[in-house]
Length: 113
Image (cartoon, rainbow, N blue to C red; front, top):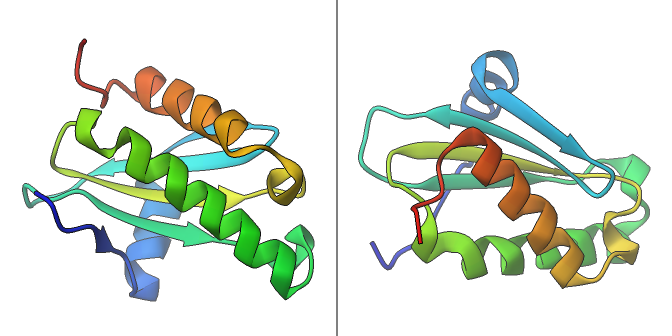
């Protein structure tokens, strides 16, 4: 499980928005749904509300870094969509990581330990 699998299809994102469980914090929204495979897949959404291109890119970068940091501790077989919020590009990556960890813990997808 060393390869990171990203969600690219609109239908995958829509499925998570409709059926996934959502967790909200001031810097991040997380949608989580069990998938049929044994893989971990993730997607990142940054809307125009986040800011112009540079801000959206930074938001994606810090979310991706937080996901990669927590990746080894996540149970397999889930899809995630992380949605950046207005405060995301201004937040430190550690803040994003803490928020993501809290969401994944609340969903019960983090491995114990």
